[in-house]
Image (cartoon, rainbow, N blue to C red; front, side, top):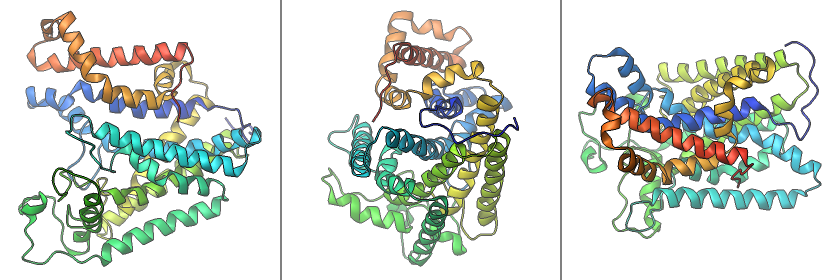
Length: 398
């Protein structure tokens, strides 16, 4: 693992990136397994409680494995950018053409996000907190940072985090007469914070106030008052910092360090970032909240992303453990298709399985595990569809 490695050629595709992306998409698709439902049906079982917790989002402060899906997906968009730019530059594409493609990609991602969030709604649901819309809103700026040297990217991350922190702190806290119930928060909700951290409370912060204005500029059946989960459009600003950390990591992978040097750099960066984010939360300077993408969340989740990528690169591309992650690579090489399938086909496949196989088949282990077995069957069908596309080299790209 210590042999010197030249910069990666423009055409090189790292299996570790595809496998990591595949793991992220698998965790999202695996929601059909309903671990939390099994845990509720089998109370007191520590295994199912553990799995149920890590397949659910935390209420506000903190992190579960499920909370790392969106930052990982965003981070990997950044990781791929240096490789994409190198490939396109090798084919002689001008910067103007590259930037126009970045704008097109951003527009498609935003449109796709809105389309998916509108499924089952009476009309277009103009909302911008979806993973795809968040990436799309920040992607043109990410592209421009991809053209800059590493020091400029580090500087951009610092500016984005500090500016976001200052903006939230300067936004005034609600007065004593403010009715939390009007914004979907119970006054005795156990996750309310006080002191400096209160500037990041659910639906009383700067991002919520922005959406009360911004989202009501679009046609709606009813005025927008709050997001039930606390998610916000302005999350795309610190999400851009997460994606920029990915660009930095991607440039490291393309760089001249040895394999061991790259792994060591990624693991060290991951530990430092994760500890910095955790420390900011513990000191009360900035809570670690995924739902509004606080600066400390950028560092904490970004640290995990560095660690995952470093481990994946060392094991898969360094030690050559590629055969073991092939099922994940199948998903990761068609991540957009996997994302769309989970939204568009999951229900159809589930209903078809029940209709043709019979509900009793999925009760073979008892009623508590019916949804688990049904979900596993859906997940298998989705993977087989992706494998069919992989075998025929059908890859959905934007």
